[in-house]
Length: 389
Image (cartoon, rainbow, N blue to C red; front, side, top):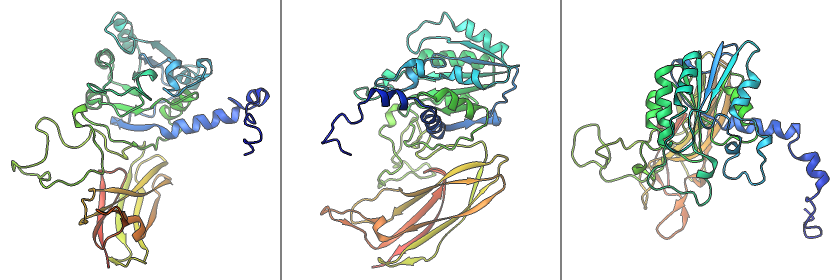
């Protein structure tokens, strides 16, 4: 790279002016943002919205908060360059659409003095876009939380009042970590995880909200129901007292909440629906030096074109040391038109089945394995194979 000869090779004011925030770079920022959004819920297909909707109310402390859009790693990011959610909606709607805005409350605190204004706008609107979550300063380095990883209570109270006033609410979440959000998940008809989407976040969100881009993002971490479940992850070790479907007393479970997360690793919806079928392996027994092919049929059974991230998981049923109940071994993003189907093929070798044994040697061991394929780590179909000595 030539940095030993010239350590300041890329520190050039002229280059900075010509290369930073160019049209091309903004396009990449927008694409990156929209691909990262995760649709968590979409009851009654509220999304996508129609750009010609008569009145849209944009409400919430993160709806027009440019300082939060770039997240905790914003460094020298300038708020004047940021497209907020409100600005993105305003940029996208038709000339006949009224966009109403009210902050409603601060991100934290207890001041409800603007609740009434927000509720009145919600009553006037055909649909509400509610922007809630964390501030950028709440996440990132040295920002761990112990007692609560939920949305601040003032925002949940605002959400409850808005939902009473208008049932057509799409909730946009801004956060930098998995959060607890059971009331939102149980009650809000539509929920879109936006993270901290960056400079072009507002325009990217508008593209998804109005259906110009069909969301395809998947969760990179499990979302707990309550903080007491943490750490919670899909590739946990099996227990000697696994969960059963009966009332047998000696099960490893909570008394007050399910063992499963609110949203599992790999989870994410689309405006269309996908069907998995015909999971097969090309051989039921495979040698160490052979390749195993796993194929599955994926069909878009909805009315929209869309992309699905097909995920492959494996379980080693018996190991010399305890093995996880599932391990992600492959994934592929597949674009399908409405009604289209495609056979997706994955390949595995013994190298993909290696782990560190008791002597810290990286080995694969012969034995029985299960294979799982699906749209997330929980909703899968399965088959099996045997690795021979």
